[in-house]
Image (cartoon, rainbow, N blue to C red; front, side):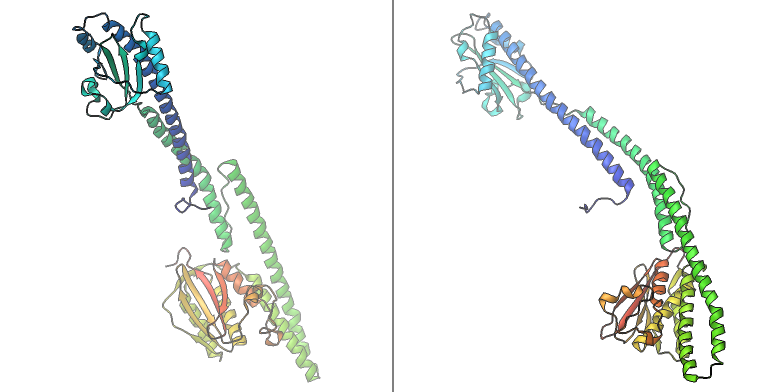
Length: 454
């Protein structure tokens, strides 16, 4: 599954994953400390409430009715208020509150009156507390309050109201998380660059090999895994280059060596008196000669010629003009300059093969250039029987000729399209065969613009 907004580069991915891991772990720690602090604060406030209320109740009981208000005022604080609760009506308590009320009763002196009337309420809304009983800091707020009710004598009831403190979010941990995230991201950038830089060089080298350029040597650096990959690539590239060069030299040598006996055979056939036999042998010799030339062309492949900037439009136009002058049914649609960076002789050979195929099997060739997003398409169309979809990949294999439309009677060798595909892919492009609207075949050579082209 691929996330829509997930970054593509390894550096950004590594930074995001590292920063997210640090942030999540620190947020988890902060939440744990926040919850733990909340529980500790709650327990501390309950213990404080029981002790303080018991102490105030025992003290107030020692004073006369007139002096008790002064004692309560002196014992009160902005967050905690002691006052006499007149007309108090007991509310039902929860099981936890009943346990706390029992603990408060046990903390009072043995002779304290009406212990069974003690009440504890842990979560009291401010609206349920009369104005005169509210702590100063609770007024005008929506504070969570704790209230205790303790009888002093038969006529007086002590109300104790405490604001439940809200645990403070551990800001220090969040600052530490931000600093840790920055440091971890910096470390991720350092490690990512150590990994990405050699991988980028490896990617550029692989792209150069795929485009048919000279195989560059990848610097063997970075972590051991990446360095081993560079070492393996260099070894593979050297072996592939050596193998291709050996095959190219072998094909070239065979092709050149065949030319001499073919020439000698052609001379000797002039002395054959039987004209029918001589013509048959000459046709076979011509077919063998054409095959030899195709083998030599395939042997040259993408080797030898240097790339340079050319006008593809002018290159294809000159080829079409040459073919038109020798009577070939070739039409060319004018196109504005199309600069690309390529090996021009190879491109000319590939286009010529497509045009000659169109003339041979489709009666005519209509040639044009179409501009695409990243380059140009050389389009060659004919009016022949076309090629079925099942055979459009097979025709690029060496020595494949389709009996229905490309048979031996036409003189084809089965190497033309193979060479076209090799040249196009050697330039980072491709060859596409498709049906032409109204009948016939449309062949496209896609050639991307390369660095250095205008």
